Length: 399
Image (cartoon, rainbow, N blue to C red; front, side):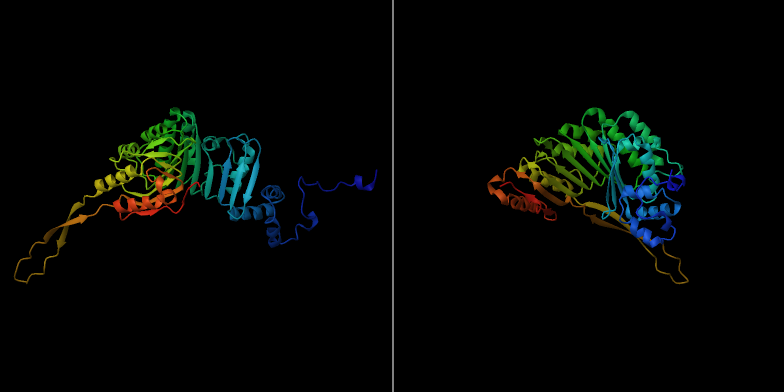
């Protein structure tokens, strides 16, 4: 036996150390930060376990360089990590059965994450993830924006999420719900999820994305929604055949359900309207058509005219103005204050402030104009609503 084997040395680390251990205590923090900045996320997680000093420096670096986490668990079988340092984004793909990895992820980033992208299933089962330290703290208490993918939620998942939601976030300012409306069985659960977020975060700006392969599912989902004022509603078709979508039916449902969105977007539909019903039930900031077929340009213009006619009357408001009485002489009694009633004509807001037509769109009725069809659409819309801004700069045609 040689003398080397008889001497018990220090235990070897389980990762490849970039420099000998005997020089570690003498390396300044500035040099360590420079070295750690060139490492991957996986290497930093390994170095974090060396000592408390390294752990502190690495956690400070992660807090500064990672502000967004995109967590994908649907269809994932292995843990994959991609760190986009320029965007300060960490994209993680891992199976749901990885509680230890997810616990470490939450522990490192719970105090610095401003934006979280995940699926609804992860939020439902987050209570099963045990974080050793500060278990009373919120899981993502610093998060301000949330993007959630909702696919076929079950009723028990919604009940579980409702009971745990207040322990996940503090106060969100922006929420995006991507709802996959695949059947009528998920409509009630989707509506309940929207109601939970709207009640829990009343100040948040909510964006609703509805994905379905036919218009009837979209209409049924909107009829199940509670009255709300989302920032944006995106209606996206998942069928390549571009099924018909009736704008007049949508307008009636939004009016009946008291759903007032500021932006409405349509993608991959064949849009049709009757030319009598207003295209929108109320004032709208942006009406966007992306990669759609407009079944009749004349009917669409007539629907905009109907909306203008509906909102054209001016509202008369009586305004009471109190006038101060003049100071009377000392030998006279004070006169009572005078009330003057003025009639003020209050103009209603414009129907639609901005119309955008983008992507590969087909304008039926203007096909003979070929690549100039969008110019004629601009002229017709501008004639019926002069105050409306029209943008067709992003439209393109197949040669």
